[in-house]
View 1: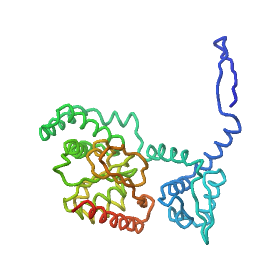
View 2: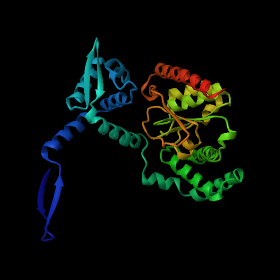
View 3: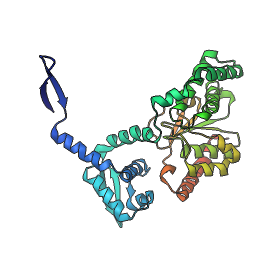
View 4: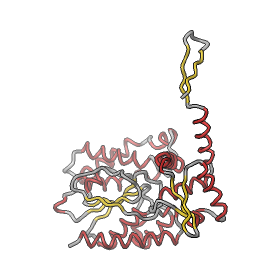
Length: 329
């Protein structure tokens, strides 16, 4: 690391500035330049989220209307800056995230992608808050009557937290209060759940809560017919459910599918669950004694075609049937 000493003209004492060296800066700049293409970022995201840990050119060509040679060119660029490694097996070349860059790639995609898709600014917050206190307080008072076993302050805090969490990804603010009511009701039900007197409860967790976790919850509710309760949540929820998934949910649940929306993961939901199923979100769930944990390696609908999403649904359906059979006597 280089240390450069400069002199501030308004003072008599030198100021030491610490910056990365020229060689390191040149390397980082080359990597960032390689990543500054939207298709390359989508390819990187697809590889990073693939449950197999790798993807081939044939998989990645489906992301955009481009030829396989074009895909190979972009992958070669990413490989050239040591973001990817490759291995030829038979006809196809398979690509993986370079192990030494995996943490950096994960941090990049997790940190910037949600902010890019659903920006949150001071102006958004100002727009949401003029009547926040009055409407949310009134809602909390109404819900407190329904759950007398909880203190009114606990209900108010839960409602406020629910509103704030949903507002972070909201694009249309007119529905925030009704969504807050549904989310808060679910959280209050989780807080007051009596395990001994309740049917089994399953929580499905993915990153965006816009695809696979929603499908899994809907399939459990359809198959178990009330004998198992299914919830879903996201570690970094999107603002809307993926369109292909939305249409499949309508086939499964009918009009009730319109009530579904992405929700953030809460400790309440984890504590209330008998089983927590993670789906591509890593170790984001708090470990609660007495809760069973499992991970399902299923594809991400956000990166799939309509046919691909249907295949993901069928994969989840098979897993759901085994899970319900296991939970029910």
